[in-house]
Image (cartoon, rainbow, N blue to C red; front, side):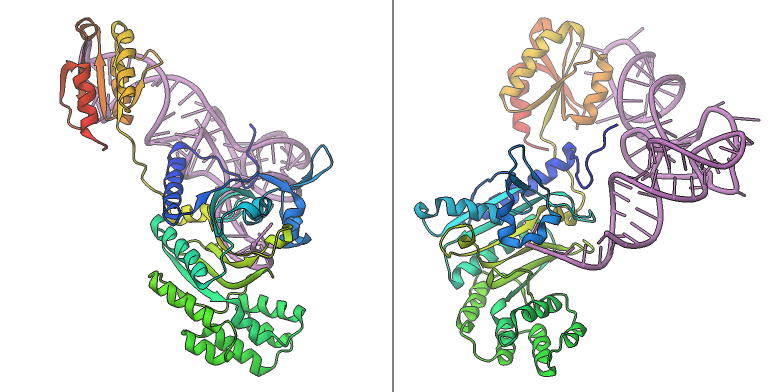
Length: 407
RNA sequence: GCUAGGGUAGGGUAGCUGGACAUCCUAUAGGACUGUGGAUCCUUUGACCCGGGUUCGAGUCCCGGCCCUGGCCCCA
C-alpha cells in the first residue's frame, strides 16, 4: 500500500466541509472590508524566496531544479508571491491595493502539532498606504476575522520603532542577536552579549510595559511616537481587543513599523495562529519602495484550535424503489434535484428494506416508489424525523420538502 | 538537525514475562422480520507498518528504515 508523504494529510468529507465553512467565514470577513482574492502559482523561482528571507531557508523549502535546469521552489508562504504579483502590475493599480489570499504552502520541516509539510495560509496585504489608519485597519481586519471563526485567541500588538530606538547605538549584528533574545524572552542571554545593565533594564521594562505612557517614558520621545499613539487610538475606535507588547521582534529586517501576533489556546508549542506587520518588500522584487502591511493566518492551526465540529447536512432525500418503480424513480429524483434538493438513489439493487435502512442513516426524507406508485404516477413521501408518510403527487412532494427548510 | 513515546481490520482496542485457527466494539456486504426502515438476530469482509536478526517457534525480544503523536531548534 502506498503511503502519503510525510507531513501531508487526506481530508474526508466531514473534515473538508468543516474547513470550507471556516474558509468561507474568513472570505466573508475580509470582503466586508473591500479585500479581494488573488491567486499565484504553487511554485516560483527559488530566488523570490531567498531574496526575501535569505539563502538559509533553502534548507526548509521544497526546492529543486526543473527539467530546464531552473531553480524552483514550492511556495513556503504567500506574501512574497503576492508582492511579486503586485510589482508586475504596480504602475497601473489603483492605490491602495487591498488583496487577500488563501492557498497551500510547503515547508520541509519536522511535523508536529499544528505543523505540516503542506499547510494552508489565509492572509491579506494592504499595499501602498502608509498611515496609522492603514496599520490599524489591517489589525482590525485580522481581529474581526479571527473572532468570526470562533477561535479563542490573544492579539499582541507592538512596534519595532520602540526597541530600535533603544538599540540604535549597537552594531547591526549585535542588534539582531539582542532582538532574537528578546523575542524569546531569554533575558539571561542579554548579559552574555555584553549589554550594560542600564540598557538591559530598559529593554525588559519596555517589554513589560502595559501602557503607551509607560513605554514612551522608557524610550523618551521618538519620531514615531505620534504615529504609534494614533495607531493605538484608531485600534480602540475599531474596538479591537489587544495587549500591548513592544517585545515582539520578528525575525527579519524588512519589517518597518507595527508588528502583531495572535496566539490561540490549546495548541501546544505551535500556538501562533497569525503574524503580521508593516514592511517594505516590493523594491526587492524590482519595484519601487512601497509601504505595505499585511498578515498571514495559519489556517490549519485555527482548525486544530476549533476542534471537532458538527457538520450540518443539507436536507437530503433518498429515492427508494422496487424494480417496478426504478425508471419512474429517475424522473422523481430529477425533479427534486431541479428544486435544489440533494437527492440520492440506490445503485446497488438493494432490497427495499435495505434501501430504507440506508436512508435512515443519511437522509431526512424517503420517497418510496413501487409498482403501485409508478402506475398511478404518485409518490409516497416519508418524513424520517416523524415517521409519517403520505402518497401524493410529485409536485406536492417536492414542494413539501422544499418548504420544510434545512434541518 | 536533536529528543521522548508510539504503530494490531476502515475507525477504536485486547494480547506484548515468546507457543495452537489473534480478542472485543464499531464499520462494511448479505440475509431474516415476506412494500416501511434506524432495533434485534444470523452470516460475511477485513489487521499484527516494512526489512533484517535471535529462536524449533516472533504481534511479542534485538537492529535498521518508514510513518504518527509530542517537546526542542527553526519559524519567512
